[in-house]
Length: 74
Image (tube, rainbow, N blue to C red):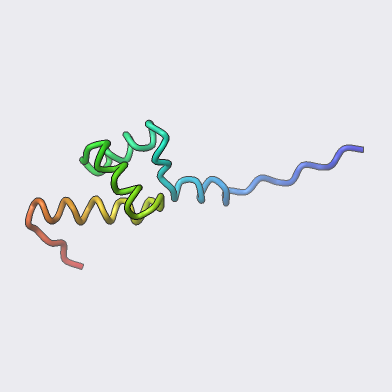
């Protein structure tokens, strides 16, 4: 008798979307387009802070703020 398949959850998908795979060109190019940075700078950010999408975007955003000389009010 075969095992009954478990109901799929969105947990795996959410965890996957929370990461940037530095070795996947399509993910790196998407993040580069989204943040307005180069592919090389996204790869460098992933290497520096890890593959967490929030950390990578924060790193790229802070680099953008430094280059523009502006700050964002919270």
